[in-house]
Image (tube, rainbow, N blue to C red; front, side):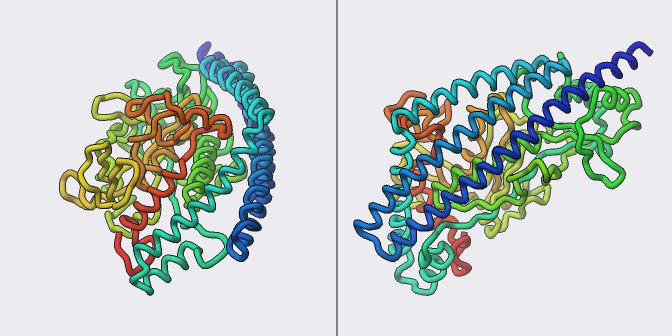
Length: 494
């Protein structure tokens, strides 16, 4: 009786805390999405004008146009980052207050940490703006856009100029005969999900495999983890759709006490907010490679589209995913067949947890790629690379069966510093390695493989976060033309 009263009282506080956090997220995220949409519209218009001048006039006039456009885009980037910085601070404040109200002390500490990081980042933005970093960065980006297009055009001419039909297909596919260009790649994202209809969540909780309270963002000391990912627990309606509002301690306690007979629950490895953040960032970063990602879930204005694609898991070794089985897993679960044409559609999986061969938790991984790197690598099937990296599409897994390609990632706190895992893994998918990426200014940096310190850190004068480099973009296109030919013309193979 007293426990029921305690759960009911705690649920009341949790309800208020969730309302506070949800209201803040709805207002802030919607405002940020509107601002980003306006900025992106202006940026696209500016780039289109520059591309038209470059395509139709060229020469000195095009150079002046790129310089002016770089200044405009630098200012747009400044406005965008100020909006993002303020949104991060307000969102973190809402998180801290909401978590404190519902006695989620780990969430409260995370909120304070995000608040501190947000304030520091906003200060850095102001300093960079005062010293002209955004203007310089905008101009550099414009000239790199132009150089990349010229490089791709020359590469296509060199590789397939002797085959007029294929050459024409590729130029049409990439838009090289038009003002704007780029390779459109479809991308599919699925979040791992547990459903109490098929998995005894109450039993897994009692055994210690999962902690439903912690996964729901409620107070829990088993474990008390500040770095807990942004997971989500929802009740399920009679129509088998997720209810919008988060569960309370009362709901979870009734589910546990009834051994799963009361309330149908679904547990997701990520929240819609976490997914939207990663998908949007991946689109932005891949654009610098000349890649136009098109996700299967509309991550813009996600607040009005909470039902994102999920991949239901039913086994404990899927909850704690063994990365060594990734190539085989996506094939066995029907997510991939091993058909080479699937390489033109990126498959990304958002997992709860996964472990490396040494038993430690991993950040992310690419599957379906054979990777060797370093100064002493054998001659590579992808010619003319400049990064001592050799990646090819893996045709078979370790057992000789067709390999399924994919990338896998998870949510890691602090997200401000670790939200680049998905674009990093997509970089691997598109042919990039860790080697030669010393310095945290690079998206392809990895702590175990690279040195933090590098002269390239001076780039933070004009860039605010890790980026793909122009050299990365050129090597991606060498990989695409050599390994992903079927994505460019139906007359080529992957």
